[in-house]
Length: 275
Image (cartoon, rainbow, N blue to C red; front, side, top):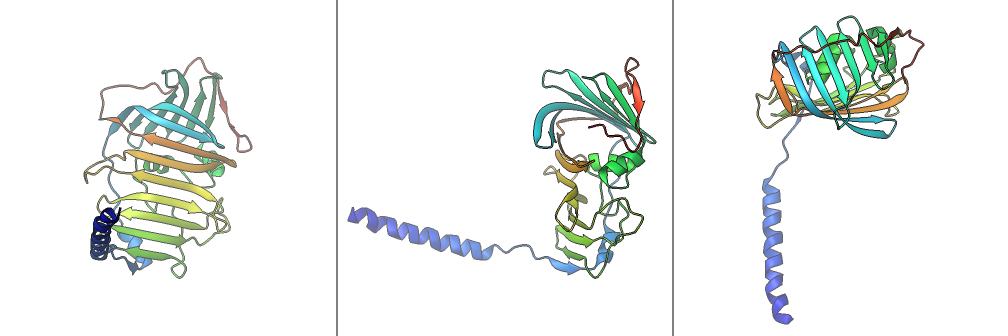
């Protein structure tokens, strides 16, 4: 027993010594305070497609802590239309959402009902001023801290910059006519990819209005995120949506139908909720 301890003790000492040595040589990337004017210099990436088809993407839905694992198909034409079809793991279509420039149509295929509404309705539901371009940017990882046109307090906002990222906590200057209670924006922007990795809008009580997480690939020229995690409030319902983009076809020679002629579509007024 003594001999075992005699050999083990020097080994432990060497491991600890080298661990401390290497730990001392690894320095955290230095980040320095930056002026809020830095926001104006953030690159906004261009759209990597005229049209795109993303098939068989794992899709996870969290509705008030009730989880479902599904499949999604996404078809989009730049600045024109965005169609998201949701299927069961066995391939049965259960829902479809069609975003067009001036309207949104949601089809509940299980109930054989359709609802059509405009972006003002969606904005009130989310507590944010949104339009078609906003939704397109959010889904394909092209969102920017400047997209919602908030005004920020230079005195109460804080930014840091390093060689690889820009991080900021931005205090929103509230306007009396704003529809939302957003008070703070947090973001992390990768200078390597020229894209966001994290974006969050929340209240002073810490309640999320919108949360986005983008996971990019290891290659700088990756145009689409590998994974998107979106959390938001919809008329006080807590919704979480995750997409894993697996198979991406740019400018595909296909057509995806945007409607179901046999399903009656009901216009929604601002005082009506889908859920």
